[in-house]
Length: 381
Image (cartoon, rainbow, N blue to C red):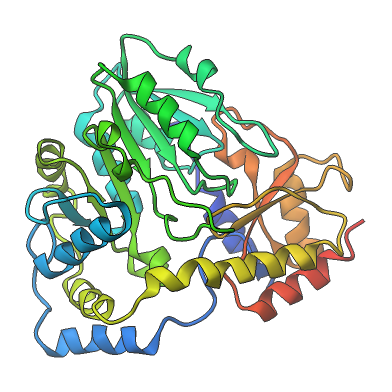
């Protein structure tokens, strides 16, 4: 049998590779972005109660209305943005499914999609699966700022979508108001769609304000906003997220969504909805993770690793250029086998494998885990 792969250059993701290495070598896993501490016991109880209450069959295709109404209230509260829970909010099986569905909804063969690299690794494969063309714009360390005048040069008559991500995975950078204003100017009077990956929206530091596209009607009218309960509730394995979009865009999104997953885990939706009625986790999250960021940065100052800025997300990037001239993948693997710490090499986030000798560390971990990891990294030389 001859098999013609639709993704011939794609293998197992670097996240799976590094987590498997961490498991095999019993290393401390700072690679994949998941917490190693438990979720709130009340949330677990709410999930269990939802099962006892009979929420065990298919949910409505768009998601439970009670949860969509809570999301609508949250968007009004944080961004003064009105989203109709009936027609403009859909619960998804995590952020990645929402991203794939949004891309799948509108991208056809020959359509061009601008992405900013280093980029979360699901963007480019999803575009390529549909015959679309990835137009990557490479951001530069250490600040990973966007040069919008240069981005403008990527625009053609075939530009269909721009994917933005703030707070940014993997760099920890965030978009500022001037970035949003530049994006408004570039997309004005066009049919270009925006996919705004905002799964780390509440993990933002130092008093900065998250610049959601929901704040700007000129962008909201052409945008899919992707969010995740996994990041909000410290429960990445539950794979529950949501997508926001104007009714005309969401109607098309749901056409694809219904034949992709149709509906999402019902007891999880019911339990989350009940939990969010009483738990103000939105307010607690920035300080919770800022303390972890500050702890990790303080600890890493004892090492020869160079800290890059981190304004959001739960990832800290470091440069090892003063330690070794190895390729980042090789260095990351050696950290696991020789020092017992797993990280992610940033070249995995570039289409062309750009290697700036930078690693990503996840600090969504117990303080003790971070302390043990850095104790191992202090011996790097």
